Amino acid sequence: MPSLRPGTVRWRGRGGPTIKLMERPDIDLRRLTLVGVAVLTALASVTLIVALLESRIGVPDASAAYLLAVVAVAVAFGTRPAVLTSIGAFLVYDFQFIEPIHTFTVRDPREWLNLLLLLVIGVVVGQLAGRQRDRAETALAGEREARALFGISFALAEQRDTVAALGSIAARLRDETRMSRVWITLGETVAADAKQAGSTGASPTTPAVHATLRRRPGDEPAEWVRVHAPSRRPTQSAESAYRVAITAGEQTLGSLWASRPRGIGDPDGGETRVLAAAADQIAGSLERDRLQREATSAEISRRSDVLKSALLDSVSHDLRTPLASVRAAAGMLMDPDVEWPSERRREIAESIDREAEWLNRLVTNLLDMSRVEAGELRPNLAVFALPDLVSEAVTRTGVASAGRVVTVEVPPELPPVLVDEVFIGQILANTIDNAAKYAGPDAPIRISASVVPNGRVKVTIEDGGPGVPDELLPRLFEKFYRVPRKGEGSRRGTGIGLAVVRGLIEAMGGHVVARRSSLGGLAVDFDVPIATVESSTEEAG
Image (cartoon, rainbow, N blue to C red; front, side, top):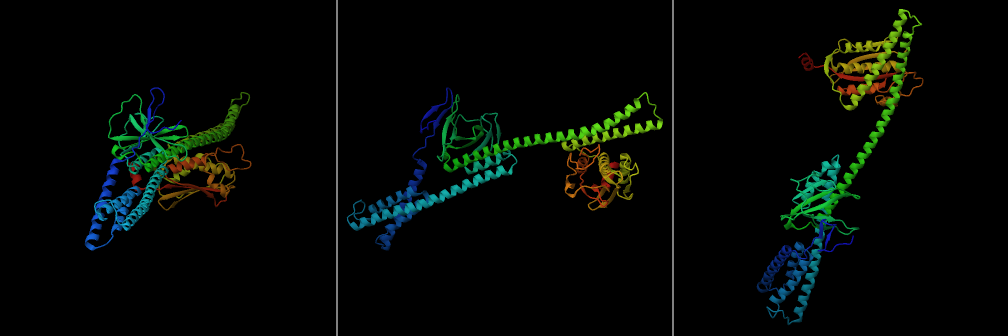
């Protein structure tokens, strides 16, 4: 696209927006008036001083005093006004103090030399002082730009997503760029129903006439281009509107809008750079948010597939084994050619009941695991005697059958605990069942409890089995994790029993850890709160 010169008008298609490069006036009348008044005031003041020095004090040549005016104007307004002041000083001193007075005629050649020296020194001093002022202003402008961009970067880094940071970014841009209002819209088009965020005040509709920032290739500075919306009549407004597109690659993500009083003029180079850099940072942050969402979605999908595979692998095996046993036992009872004695029938029925109980625990663990993951566990806390809870769990799991040594060391004088009856029953059953399953049929199991600091009771379930390597202890409570073992047998476990234990304990505000047991195997410790007088009163009420 060919570059546009100031004043050039271009239409984009039939009925499209009219684009016009903004005219930049060569003369700023307000600044010119201010500079003129300052130069005249400085020259008049110094002229009075020179007259006083030469007529009253007797200084033969006080023309050097005009350098004060040159330096003052240079510091206040820059190089060009300082050079103008030095020329004015040359003319005023010639007209006012060189013979013949009140003419620009110079008779004495030495006076010509003094005037020329005054002019040259004044110009040099004015340029040096003006350049120093320009450097100071450039440094201050750079500092303001850096501070504004740092604030924008910090706001984007502080929030979890870009949209949450737009409000503070808009407020900072309003203050740093002398805007009366700044608002940010997200979307490919700016319309009344566009998603808006970060507005400082009510967000107006897109103005019929606004200036949009046109980026230029390379290091060429960007320029503001006046845009007239099609089919809309411009209205008189005391403020000018400006738009910077927020783009990522070829895609327009939104717009950064700002308005300011017309009397201030258009944004200068520093303000334009801040607005452009802010739009670029917002675009980059939005793109990072998009990539992060895609990466998170991909990771969630990957983990979901892994968990589904692990669940199917574990559950299919653990369902198949008891179902096969139930079908075999039921088939034996249904065989019309075999007359089973009553005692044998009872044994077969008991095996069916055991397998059904196994299936019930498996389904219960799966349901509890889904509730843990969904965050839907809401304990119904009540006061219970811990010895009764432990005794019931031991009986229900049948761990003391078949001659296994099970030691219960839960003192009856322990204070009552504040727990959910269903949760604590499942915790005890899962932990005891885990010990019985992996410790071996001849390994002892010990269940103990004691009061610990902070008003809690610690329960320990340990066994005398082969145990778990120390480096694998932290992984025991991970979902679907099973310690690698040789000769596991037909029932290797789903790897969710202890994961459910952790979820239920944490739902009641407790903590669970695994360690090496003093019996030689695995020990699982968890704590529950002691019931207070208030909790006992609430339950009674």
